Image (cartoon, rainbow, N blue to C red; front, side, top):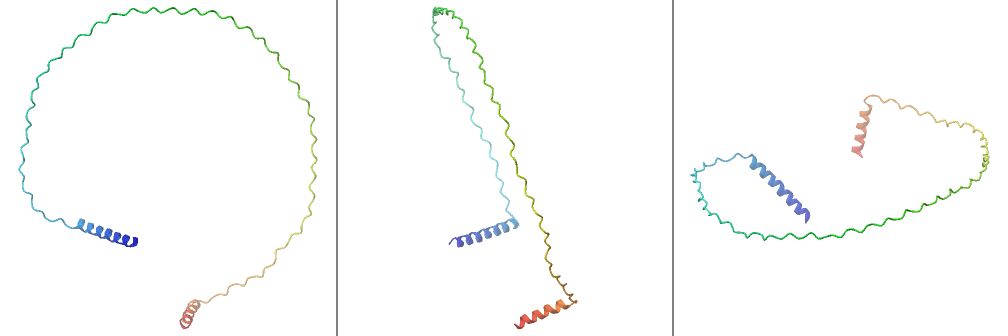
Length: 155
């Protein structure tokens, strides 16, 4: 079902594109001249009506507020003098015990590597010599190809 839809879509797209190309490449038709349209006069808007000035509203004056007396603030109480801090006695410096002397550890004795005897050198096996390819005379390749073609046709 979907393949049918895709095929229809593909055909319609290709048909549309070829039609569009044909319309683009076609020569334009001669058109009749447009009749002259008389220009309409611009309408003049009516003048704005004159608005009379509005009278200023009378605003009553603000009543005068009497000045309030400044309240008396009580003085801050005097801060009593604090006694001096007592002198803190210095603590005696702690004596750290000396580290005990550590004797040097003896070096471990490493055993010597055993001497490995040398192995005898192995000889590479002898391979037989490959014979050279015999020279093919000119034209023999073509005759061989014809013979193979004839054998294939018979068989």
